[in-house]
Image (cartoon, rainbow, N blue to C red; front, side, top):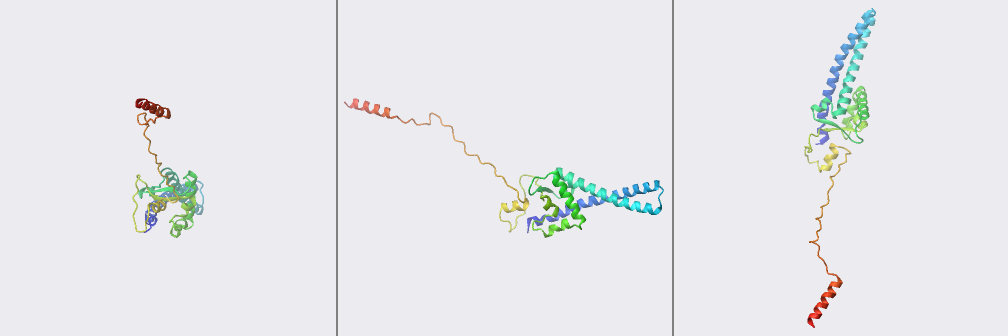
Length: 218
């Protein structure tokens, strides 16, 4: 079982939560837009046909404005600060960079591409089913990825027979990430004292000792 594939249902569920928030926000905003449009046309004493058309326009504009506003706050501002949207927080997921560091420009570009993918019939999300890395189109373009939230220094990973090494797991969870090894300190040598140093006799001392021995023998 692919580790990344096993996480796909969590990401799908988190996206469903985010879309639900944006949908309900858009519906509430649409009624507000329709009421404003009806009030404006009533003050102008417009014809009933014009009022009906204005109300429809207000409904559509209100829905689009509020849905996009809530989406931008959730997916750009909140996710840019905490690396997770509301849906991702509920399902313990977070956004990471698979290349350059994540910036506000990255978050905005990712959001714009995701909105365009939804407008194109959800193509940006359907793309993940055909991608080997299971990445959506906006993640691919923005250079980001979604992984389990790292709550501590140890990460629990589901072990399967296909998992061969930690290196493979690391590339699955954090693509293109660089693992920097901790520096290994060389053992510190003990200070050398005068007592530990053996004093070797010099050549003059050896000659002097030999002469003393010769005098004693004589």
